[in-house]
Amino acid sequence: MQRQAYKNLFYLGGFGVSCFFSGVYFQKRYTIEGCDLKNYPALPIFGTVSAATPFTPQVTEQKVSVVNRVSQIMKYGFPSLDNIRSFEDYVLSYDRRNRVANWVFEHLTAEKVKHNPEVTRATCEFKPDESIHTFFRSQNSDYKKSGFDRGHLAAAGNHKSHQKHIEETFFLSNIAPQVAVGFNRDYWNSLEKYVRNLTKVYRNVYCCTGPLYLPQINSDGKKYVKYQVIGENNVAVPTHFYKIVVGESEDGKLDMEAYCLPNTVISADTPLTSFRVPPESIERAAGLLFFDNLSRSKLCKINGKKN
Amino acid sequence: MQRQAYKNLFYLGGFGVSCFFSGVYFQKRYTIEGCDLKNYPALPIFGTVSAATPFTPQVTEQKVSVVNRVSQIMKYGFPSLDNIRSFEDYVLSYDRRNRVANWVFEHLTAEKVKHNPEVTRATCEFKPDESIHTFFRSQNSDYKKSGFDRGHLAAAGNHKSHQKHIEETFFLSNIAPQVAVGFNRDYWNSLEKYVRNLTKVYRNVYCCTGPLYLPQINSDGKKYVKYQVIGENNVAVPTHFYKIVVGESEDGKLDMEAYCLPNTVISADTPLTSFRVPPESIERAAGLLFFDNLSRSKLCKINGKKN
Image (cartoon, rainbow over all chains, first blue to last red; front, side, top):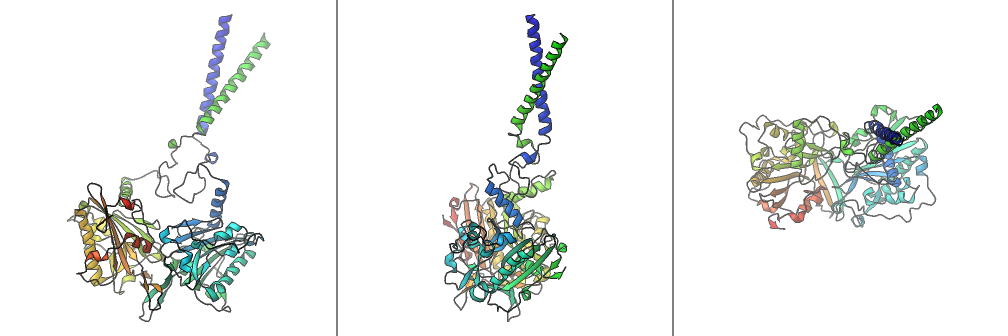
């Protein structure tokens, strides 16, 4: 009887072990081959910004939100890919030769441009962008006594919902030498306000801003690019600035407007529409492709005219 | 008795099921969390060149050899990463705004610069680089009647071991407007010969060549960058050209030489050494970092002087 009990126990053990390995096999077969990547925390399901860091073991919530914000801002494509610098509420590409950004990208909505009364511009300070190599980094001293304003590319006024957002627009990588009276403080400021007001018309406004260095025909009949450089770091003074804007309506319709303004005194009564130019002309001059993820044939209007 | 048998069968079934799920749990715990990424074919274990193509199922031998050649040429680092274009025997970064390369990189050895008698320059033709977007692509028509030569950055004379290699140096992405007599056809050519001859001294010669747009002080005491642009595509005429060379001896010793020449007639009796400049000065002016993978403290000589 006791021998029979041992025998039963042996069979039972064998049965248990075989069930265990059946379970192992089952799980292996249906998880390794069909490995559910969405549940695997280290794998980027969506594209990552940097090729150098495809594997991020610890992603904090804040980092995730910044990456999400970058993909929101850059929804319609990067105009170029050199020296990308992403902040919490805007993204730029830095021109290391001219010490001014190539382009600065913003995403504006009515909610985001609302002025949070706790946010103040008064404590903001222009500061060098330490992420730029010292050889190519512009400094406050470069602008001092140059006669030019430190003009914002991503406008401070667009980023008043959080103190950190407005503070980040004061990095010198977002700044370019602008004519002060009659331009930065006046006409350019009006253009910034105009773009901000587009959030009353469109659910989403995507705004790309940058410098241009346009050629002119000289007295010898030849074309020359000529621009001043200021300070020890030879910060380029752009001849012109562009703004190219896409507005996305509630119903998903898309319009584009493109502006090119000379970096000079502009009379306040000059109509803004007189600075509208074909988007391609800015692309050719800047060496950039704007809203490249968006087929231009999908735009309803370009510069107010049916496309 | 029959009831007891059913009861035993029930316990046995329960035992089997619990063993099965133990097995499932065991396998899940020790494979999903520690998932062996090396066996998962879609994940790049090693760094990839392009973020867009981390997985290349079919790589031909020729492609592998081109990639190997690129890594040989670029051994000491990319000066920048915008608009990289790799050919079979040289690599460049294209400046879409100026329609001239930012830099062109070559790797020369005594064997590679030897003239294969089957290779001829006579059948080579300057041709637009179709890989560049039409907005930014320079054309032969831009150079026509401009008064400037179509000057090679990667010298044709460095790539005479294969017909395809020399032909690829005639892509207009490798070409810049150069003053013809007294520069491209004379002094610049001597510098190219000098660099080629360094392969008699060094086992490996790494050569980076590119344009500069240097500021000058005007009569108003301010600094201006001024350069001509030619043709319908506004191809920039560089004010200067640089060459920065690293020679690697048989014993692994490294020397660096850096030259900056004005794009103008230079008298043949001007010593080449008079155009030597600190490598940092070219880096600052060009917005580039040369031989960045190579600590400058490891160089034995810079411009012929002990480092």
